Length: 524
Image (tube, rainbow, N blue to C red):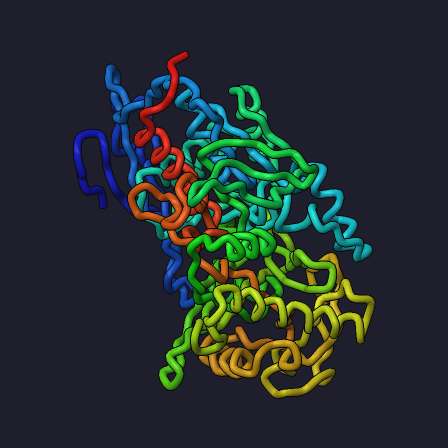
């Protein structure tokens, strides 16, 4: 059934197997072209026989008509007297630089790791041989942690810049559906290609990018930031420094603490990564429609323990993906999930994590105590791997054994992780309250998704880097640090974003704040 929304724009629902162009040609014979404004899959009830459907919002045009919308035009403002310095070439830093460049303002990006394609070689050696590189790993290097994730572009952020980010990704080579599909997904393989193109574009526009260069210190004058000191001893000067270091740059957090930059401890979550055969999750979610061109099935689960008011929830679900070792310390293990664009591996995985509250689960007398909480778990995991294997293997336990408190009762299934696994009691690695809340939640999850608790399900630990353990406080209007002028905390590592899209949007917001509060620039 079609409902006219406004001239040229229509909304309708189609069976998942029905061709949209055939549908439009039959009902709009005078149509000469169309574009999809949004497309969302509704698969509710498909595991009970209800056919999946797509909800469409489409704009059609007839002869002589044009699509609505205004192309954004940028005025060349000329360079600032000092190029802004952006620390970190993840989505926050790259999109901040990109937006500045669109207004004719080049910047300096400083990235502690390598370019994406070279970085991948170091990571592959870590996964295969356990050779850890402190500067090139899953979290450090061009593209940041998002380069080795599921590549989901989901965000709850309400901002006009969300669509801008999607459109720019398409401009750099993302599939066109990225601009309109609900819950777009690029996959790690396509993100790596896009990041290279964005960086090359920035260099062409006059930006400087320093790779394999770590910022060891910020330079201050009174309560203002005046530049940075690099790991090679050089100093660069600017009165605008964007801090987009990601959620794992613990050295920078310590430096900020030493110089009284305003920060606050933040709640986060820790837990495990759960892995099932993809075929099982597809069957649970889609029923008889599994295996169709609907692709790998997603799920989202949450449960709150009413006695403790703690939540346990799925996070960063990776259909048809892989479980990765993604730590940033040679003596620590962290797990994460990733998938490629096709989502065609034989496994599906997700984080299952329990909320960790400052002042309740860790003390907040020191602002970085949350970081220490994470670190303790990660080190335990590494020590357990060293005790039972070589130190590169991920501690793992079957789901049934975890629930029953056993070890070795259920044979370990095959797994997607390239690092290998070692069987271990996960409750010796995780805090007791995390293990107990996971057990309670898993029982509830199996009631919602019958078959979720399977003999073929595997738990890998620990998942600790769900978000930054601190917030670097900033003014809600200028986006500058509340304690140090000229410092712009940005993205996930600053506690102001939670994923690829929201970090990119935050970078754009900071660029716009700089541009339209700035009165001291020179015309070209």
